[in-house]
Length: 117
Length: 117
DNA sequence: ACGCAATGTCGTATATTTGCGACATACTTC
DNA sequence: GAAGTATGTCGCAAATATACGACATTGCGT
Image (cartoon, rainbow over all chains, first blue to last red; front, side, top):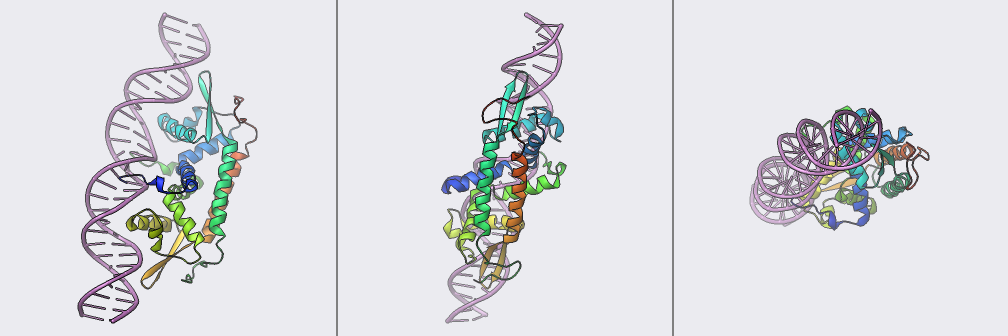
C-alpha cells in the first residue's frame, strides 16, 4: 500500500472499519462466539477448541483486547477472558446505524433492474 | 500466514468474516455511504470524492462487487454502481444475530470487575 | 528453592492487502 | 474511421496479516 491512507477518512468510517477488521477473521468470530457460549470466561482453553496453534490464538486474543472488545484478567496461573458486553452493544448500534443508513436510500435500484441514471 | 486456515471454521463464521472484511477499510465504508447518500448511482465520480486514485477506488469497487454488496451496470460510457439493498439488509440481520448472541450471555463479567472463574 | 504448567512475546516465513502508474478496452461523437 | 473520454486490468512496491516454533515470564505446588 506504500502507505496506509486511513487518516483521510471520517472518524466514524475509521472506527467502523477498525471494528469490522476485528471481525474480519473467522478465528476471531469463533473466539467471540466461544466466549459468549461458555458462561465461564475460559482462558487458554480457547486454543484447544480452535484449529490453530496456541500462539496464533494468543495473537488473535491480543487483537481483540487491543480494541477492548474482550477483557483479560489474570487469575493466578490462568487468564480469564470475557466479552466487553457494553462495548459490543455499542458496536452493534454503530453497525445498525450504518446499515440503516445504507438500506434506507429508498428505491434507487431494484433487485436486478437498471438504475435511473 | 503460510496458509489461510479459513476452511476449518463454520460457514457462518466464514460468511460473517467475509462481509466484515469488506467493511474493514474506511474507503469501502465511505463508498457505501456515498452510494447511499447519492440517489443517483454515480460511477467513477466516486474516485473524485475520495482521497484515492481512480485505480484504487476501482479495486475497492471490485471487492464490494465480488461480494455482491454493490451492483455495477454499464450505461454506455459510464458505469452506474448501486447498493444491493436486499443483501445489505440480510447482512445487517446476520450481524445483529451475531451481536445479540454475543451480548446475551448475561452477567458474566461486569464492567470492570472480576470474572467468576 | 526447584520444577511444572499456563501465558505472552519475539523472530521468521509466507500470504494478502493496499495503492498507483501504465496500458488495454469500450463507447460516444464528430 | 479518428479522437477523446470513462473504465477496467496488469504489474510492481510497500505495508499488513497470518501462522507458528522457540524462548521468556509468571505463579502454583512440593
